[in-house]
Image (cartoon, rainbow, N blue to C red; front, side, top):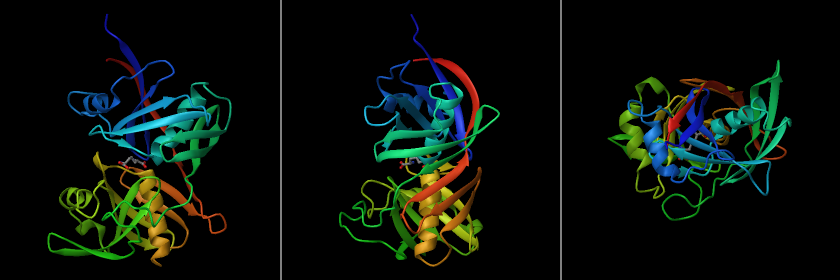
Length: 279
Ligand SMILES: N[C@@H](CCC[C@H](N)C(=O)O)C(=O)O
């Protein structure tokens, strides 16, 4: 008998994932399923697969797999969508939800409009600048010069639970993201690969950003990437600590709180459709 799996396609700022409630359906090999279902022509089409599950240390848990099947530690846009999924499907009545991720417990604050979640603020915890994810050495990488295809960029590495390389440029339209993105993702400085954000300051509190995601390529938005971009903007003196990040698929508001050192991300969460697919 065919095992039909119920899924929900959701997006946050255009970053789209397939969501499965593992309280109902067990997914044995998520790495393989993520590749199969994310394929645009032969699958459902998405930036990856997100599994919602139970947790012994938080209200629920999240696992996130990129379109190439690699598992990531954290996903900002998916964490907001999970908040919507849980509330809109009556899996919780809470509007403050704790979510276990591979990078720790995150706290979600839901805004409910006419019985449905319209936006979510996530406490993304403190950014880390000294995490060992580049070059096998610890230490900071702030405005570090990296040359790719004859172009030299000033890059800042930040972990928001997952690794990001943020590069501020004068004109983002001059950046050939499909060419430069994969080179930086796989640069020898980053043995674990890295997410790459190109950013252009529009004003003290507005930044245009485009992303090349590790394991998924160009996506319309990246929540952790938006947080890293705001933090990099602030530490390099480009922006303030309260910034709107404008991406291809939508905007996110990022606040890096001076008192607590925590980063708060606020944005939409949208249900696109529900379906069933054979495993
Ligand atoms: N789109 C995400 C991040 C997904 C994981 C990332 N590609 C990685 O491998 O670290 C977000 O919204 O944060």
